[in-house]
Length: 249
Image 1 (cartoon, rainbow, N blue to C red):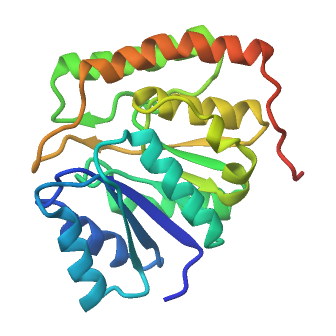
Image 2: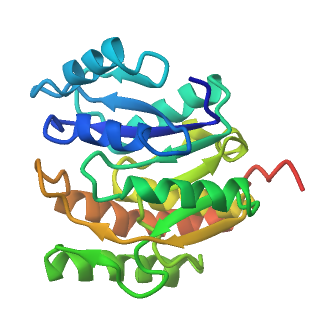
């Protein structure tokens, strides 16, 4: 089925969630296709996707299998390049575990397709702190990480580490994807900051983030450390790097 939109979902051991999230996304009134990037999940996540592709979603569900855990950032870069080749106009990032509500996808789409923004961020912090069932320590760490990024970079986005986003294809065609250096939380910061430095228009769309109920979180202290130290490198780049510019008015 033809669609102008693709939702990229990286996976590692998401057998409890993968079929449900695919059905939730493809069941929306607005037609979204789905690309799964699986990093060699030993629990059979990819096999579930293949069965759904063969039986029900031949033209709407796609799978790229990788040999192992190569990092969230590299998974998305792989998906972005594939989506650009396939000429999707709107390219989404989304988690597999329902922490991002599929029902919010049309709102992100509308911010870009109808309101003219280049990037739409599903923001947990643009209208307070909209997080459900996270330990308070993790909420505070995430919230103040975004405050830290704003302070260091001067980049005025409230949820700089958000992983629920819509890009116009032109954004990803302009950003030099092979120069994106970070793999974890800092990847999400770097992509937003780079889009900003390239002159693209960004909107934060308020969403409610719900902690996963099934499966195991992939978060680690090392991911946060990468973000903390990576922000200083981004600030340095902001002073000295020549960014490509938004190619349209």
